[in-house]
Image (cartoon, rainbow, N blue to C red; front, side):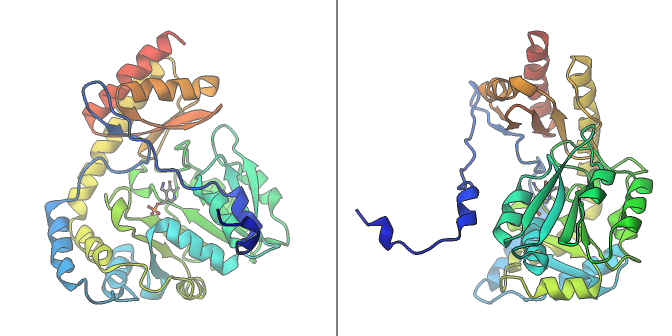
Length: 360
Ligand code: PMP
């Protein structure tokens, strides 16, 4: 037995961060396993993307291009922004960690809505800064309350739009008004991981909003609509003083060669990928309508998931889904987030959800 007193000193904040627990794979009686818990695309990579990855595999003995030059050029052209305004990271979560390394330190405050993306409190804690959580109002960001929470110590405000896990969005008029009133010393990060699924015309496009605002940055990802969650590729759009600072915090070569090749091939195949997104959006509306008809409360969603306010039934309902092989994301006492899968997967989920609603 090794004595703890001889162990190295560790940062106290790590005690407040739960150890990673791998999600349990749930299997139904027919052997099927349907993962609707991580908001991934249900579709595998396109043949053209797979081929690009296979070709890139021939160069794995070399370090990747540290600046992801070709992909940055392609993305900047695609978004209609200057190249210095784009930087890549190992997933948008990797970029968020970089952003926090850029502005976070003991004494700094990071303001965000709650409930929102589970990674926020963990990454803020790791950066040494303090989380300031502002409750959602009607399942949506309360922008007035977020403004009220800003102090001289605030370094960043995160706005998750659409919000994970509720799927709700803030509207353009309110967001513009909010951005106009946020003090200049505060970086506003618009986390738009689910942007491609947005159909509501009043939900703003962060890339249009950041252009004349030096304190606004937009986070996007290849993990969801582009179906590349496993390669870890996200990007940040911001003014050069922000992107240049963020680049200094990248773990060297963290944006790997396969990810860069997959990103370029995905931009080439965007039409095909957006067709898949359209299918998911159609399914989202079908799933929500069916849930509402069976008595569930489900806010309108602009993302690839739905949020069921299951309250005290949350864990029990998640267990009922697991019994038929569907894994969902429960937040005890609050609700369940369910990703939109293939039509068959959605039907399996809806069968459980409608039966459950009847006996609730
Ligand atoms: N932001 C939000 C709001 C998310 O829900 C997710 C994924 N769950 C991410 C960022 C992270 O995506 P990735 O790191 O795979 O790009």
